[in-house]
Amino acid sequence: MNIRRWSVGVVAAALLVPGVAACNSGATDSSTASGSSAAVPKDPKEALVASTKGLAEGNFSFTVASESISGSGSIHKPSNSAQMAMKAGDETFTMEFDVIQIDSETWVKMDLGELLAGLPGMAEMKDKYQYIDAAKAGDAKNLDMLKDGSDPANAAEMFKGLSDVQETGPGTYSGKVDMTAATDSVAADEDMIKALGDQAKQIPFTAKLDDQGRLIELVISVPAAGDTKAQDVTIKYADYGAAKAAQKPPADQVVEANEQTYEMFK
Figure 1 (cartoon, rainbow, N blue to C red):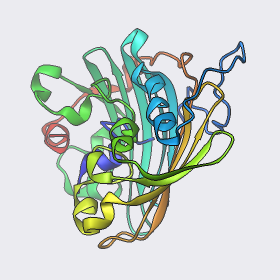
Figure 2: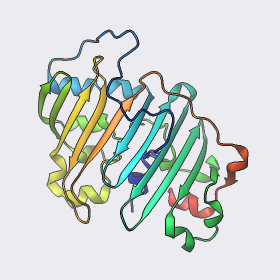
Figure 3: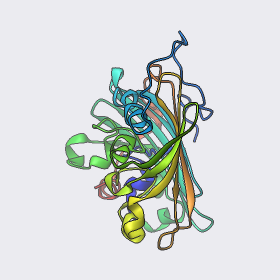
Figure 4: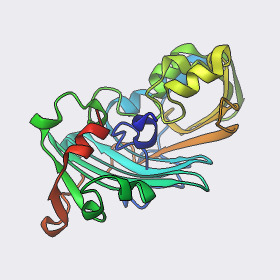
């Protein structure tokens, strides 16, 4: 299992990613308070590429939803912090992650369901935030939500491979994207890309922009691949420039991470 797909960059998110107060699942309007409209490129492809610039600034919230994933989170580079809560699985197995990062400090709370019974020391960690020692974590990049490309969908990379792009209405677009260019996206992982084969380079999508030309919704229609059913992955963005800083978990809810946790996120 590719842990990044479930945790979105923990992606935390995790990207993914329910219950984080800074997120707005009804992200249908992310215009600025002034309500003024920015110049949006007329060319549909250029408009979509430009729509990710707001994400690069690292101050936004997001939600993720599909048949197998639900979650929410926020990135707040002004305070160098991020948070994400995510639930993933199906009728046979579920897992939940809640990740908080402030500067180089990271806390992870997770519920691996029945897997806990088979992992020494993990049962005691349930409902607790495990504090991650940055030095001990080493190059566990999946625990860094503040790295370059903090967007859980990795839209900027995905949009480099746009094709058949059309403007279907005011601020709405459709086309196809190359998922092989965005393997860090919550919409796919390495196993899925491999199972899709050449299909991965022509995945249908729809997108919505606000009146500032910023991406507020991306729906990726992933076809069936291997053991994975065909499904839509919907990522919504809100709170551009107004996300809230993450807060440390209460001290009485924090324990030191164990070895199994470090291994899981390598």
